[in-house]
Image (tube, rainbow, N blue to C red):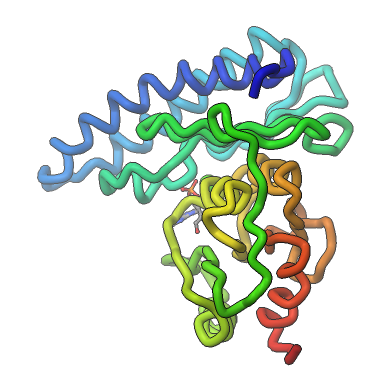
Amino acid sequence: MRYLSPALNVMVAAARKAGRALIRDFGELENLQISKKGPADFVSNADQRTERVLIEELTKARPGYRFLVEEGGAIAGPDKSHRFIIDPIDGTTNFLHGVPHFAISIALERDGQIVSALVFNPVTDDLFVAEKGQGAYHNERRLKVAARTNLAEILVASGAPFMGKDGRDEFLKELDAICAATAGMRRFGSAALDLAWVAAGRFDAFWERDLKPWDIAAGILLVREAHGMVSDMDGRDRMLDTGDILAANDSLHKPLLDLLRGKKN
Ligand code: 2AM
Ligand code: CA
């Protein structure tokens, strides 16, 4: 992206700073895998520190903005129109296992609309950014969702309900419908990166239920600015409230929604 807005510049600087420490932590994790206690505490500390650094850096540059963050919840501020929505490590289970597929996710909301977005994998140095009305970018490259329209050719990402979560029966039905109709599905463990990869045309679609706003807020704008369609599983623009999401190009979106809801085309 040749020109970043001042707000996006601030978000990139904060993510890169927090990312440097995360890269060091990730290197350490290789040693911790074999210890009996395992790396869980270490990872939880890394998560909390990353969140703290992001809040500190963003507050320095934008005092008064509110926050919604994974670890600390809602943080009040005098500015009623701006809010950062942050996931310090999306893909924590990957991080914990030494799998280099996780990201810092930051969205900036203005008057209830997401206007700037960042998804950054510090280990692979993949930076995805978007600005409302200005497009989405991967490093310097402008993004566009994949153009495939034939269900038989598409690659679809999702997230399976993990331990302690309901909805496995529903998920298995949806998975069966997708597996029967498409070229395949992937479950990589970071909703933020899944959405960034839809924006980049790597995945043709992504769906998942019961996610949190910080998992998807930035990814939603990335996909939309890459000319993709995003809705909840009822076709509404209520992903942050319902936690359900389907992202795809505009030709695939409706057929996939029908397929996932068990309707015949
Ligand atoms: P997290 O890594 O920030 O927790 C994938 O299904 C999505 O669910 C990810 O964005 C992930 O975000 C979230 N998630 C929350 N708890 C999880 C868990 N125990 N295992 C896998 N994903 C989890
Ligand atoms: Ca997350």
